[in-house]
Amino acid sequence: MGGTHAEMARLLWGPHPRPARGPRPTLDLDRIARAGIEIADSDGLAALSMQRVAARLGVTKMALYRYVPGKAELVALMVDAAIGPYRAAGKPRNGWREHLEEWGRQLLAGFQRHPWMLDATVGPRIMGPGELSWLEYAVSTLDGTGLSGAERMDAAVLLVGHVREITQQARAAGPTGDPETELGAVLGDLMREHGDRFPALTSALISTARSGGQNQAWEFGLQRILDGLAALIDQRAC
Image (cartoon, rainbow, N blue to C red; front, side, top):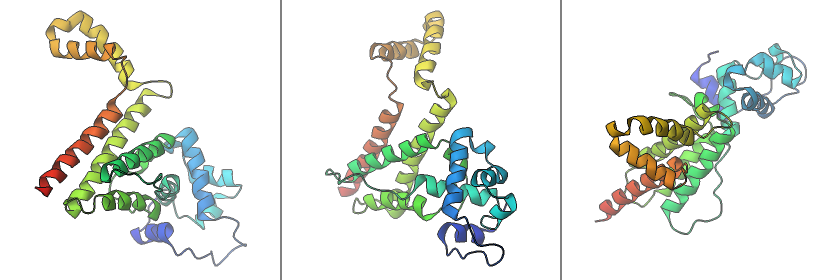
């Protein structure tokens, strides 16, 4: 399933010469990636195989290997096609914070559409131009704030981590579950029985219930991350 980093980079970034041998090419990398995405969206990344992608495209597995050397390369192509290049929604008026807030919401939506990307984007790897355009936008949004290049990169990574955590929670809860609501219900039952041992937690759960038990983990975390960046930026301006 392996391949050299150079091969991975060539597949993601080009150039993409047509196979020199065999019949006239009937496939391209985008069609192959889209077929893989359809399988992963439906059945998860574990169900993905070169054989299934080939069958979906109506070709043999050997024909598929003429374009993509293995599953690792296929998954890399799928990630870059699934996330696509970042497109800003309109022109936010309030500076870097509004830009990053919208960026985070769009990234969350992408991971929610394709939760298999959680497993496909772990560890050191070569990113494609689409995925890197997201990082480029986030880092460039913080230009002129007084943050160093490393700090701007770390800010983007911190936001990505929050997106991943929320997506992971939702995936663990299943298609019909709300992880915070379900957890709150179980904890509520426990606290009714053992609340005297955990008074602070009991009070917090009562407050949550009074507010309707709304799932605020995404919004709360997003705003606190942005608050922290704002405080650091204000500190640098002094």
